[in-house]
Amino acid sequence: MMQNMTGQTVDYDSFKAEFDKTPELKNLIDNFDENGITIKTKNKVEEPGTVGDKAKAKNAVNSSAKRAAAKMIG
Image (cartoon, rainbow, N blue to C red; front, top):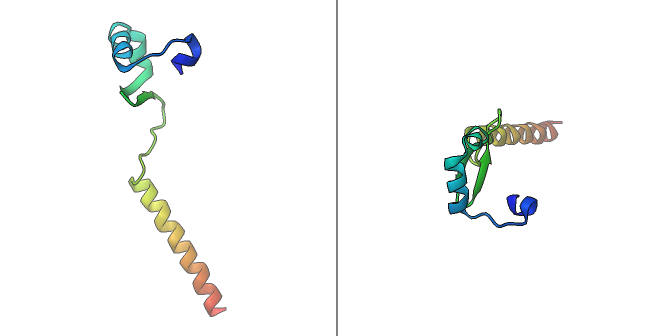
């Protein structure tokens, strides 16, 4: 994103140097590594395979099973 804004490439080391000397960035950035930056938000993104995903999958299976059972009975 910063490359698109300024026309410059920003690598991990140069971003870390800027992050360490700019307090405002600490208020905006939740985490960063060599793969990217995570912006702070009010809502946290669930990682794949978390409890929320498992609950959604279980509900989907239960709903499918109920529909299939209703078709078999009806």
